[in-house]
Length: 119
View 1 (cartoon, rainbow, N blue to C red):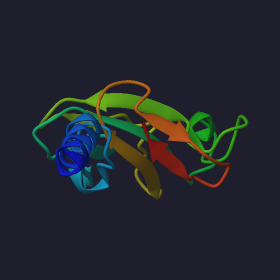
View 2 (view 1 turned 180 degrees about the vertical axis):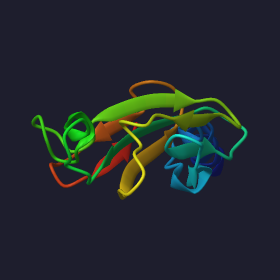
View 3 (view 1 turned 180 degrees about the horizontal axis):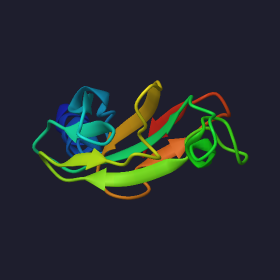
């Protein structure tokens, strides 16, 4: 009986945490016509938080570490979806992102340096 409870607990933890996993492997940064892109390469929805390091005029609203938090933008990407935006994903910048499987509020920022947990 004890073994059954242990096995049932393991199965429960595995099934209930499957969508709340880190999904960095599912997101790639690419190049679009007007900007860099974020691409969901997995077969499930992925919530992405991101920011960049370009501080020129017009790009500051997405600058990492500004406005009291590290990541500045948020989206849920469907399987195969490509996100492109010339201001939040500008050329000539480094894109930093967090990604978790699931919908909105799957990611919890942990500190002002980009640390996060998938919920």
